[in-house]
Image (cartoon, rainbow, N blue to C red; front, top):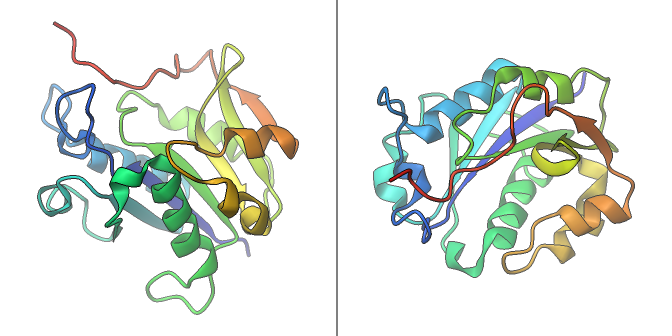
Length: 194
């Protein structure tokens, strides 16, 4: 049986937004971080890991019960560092209560509060294993979630530096792109509406 770990990247300071995105809430009061964690669980993830950094102490209280938390001390080094540590925790180390690491990770960003469950479901619709590499695209533009199998760690981890994410690696290694533009626009929230 393939084990799937969900990862919510929520470590940044949200400099363009003016506050850490891990502390943001929807208009009805739901924390973005809780919404993202619940979406990954509803999509079928066996475990969900929320990656925190800026304002981690405050954000921890917003993470739903039953969700693992990884606090990245050097989160200011960029998204690459947060993703590197998250993938290592999810796919190299055993998740709490497990005896083996996960086979694949489904990764999303905290600043996609409008992301519908149907997008994650479409990414997971085809069988996957530890060699899977799949990314949601919206009108041909790359976005999230991204599904990464454990077999890619050795090649991917060294490329995750600074604010560079996994895109270069994904392209170089033949990522399967799944069009989801009919379900969502794919845009993250970097600024609040005036």
